[in-house]
Length: 205
Image 1 (cartoon, rainbow, N blue to C red):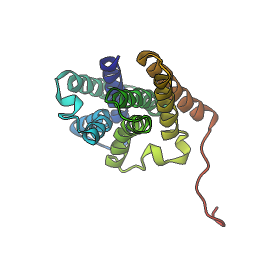
Image 2: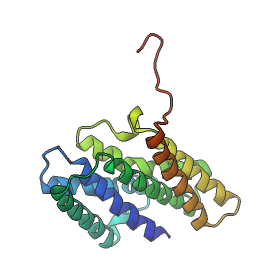
Image 3: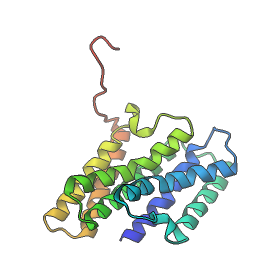
């Protein structure tokens, strides 16, 4: 289950890195850098936090090849066809779900406490996107109120996964359920414009 999630997450995340480069007048090398940072950023931060080195994508060539192929294919497609504006957000929702479960599972396998496993899931899910958006000069998606339930969706899915494992559920079932919650909340929030309250002081518009 873990290798499959790794490849799915890396592939989709690399696609979002390329889509984020649209309109930025970035050359192919810059696009590849964005794709790789997005694909590997969250997992790299996670592995460094838990001291699991070398980090996951350095242990073999396949994840790097996966991300590179995904980036090149997306680059070619986007140059020929105009994709809907929501494509980035939908692709990012799938990457968020996959990476959140990867991080959560890693925390459970390494026998960290439940709150730490949840935190690792959230960090793995959002860190790559934060790095991607910072490199393109954008406010990271996770901090934008109009993006709707981003880190919150990751938190809910990671919590469900850890809870199911705590009561004896199988890892595969827990991960699929958690991923479903992340993806479902994220897509529902985008469709129905559900968001958390924005912090405002008295008198602010």
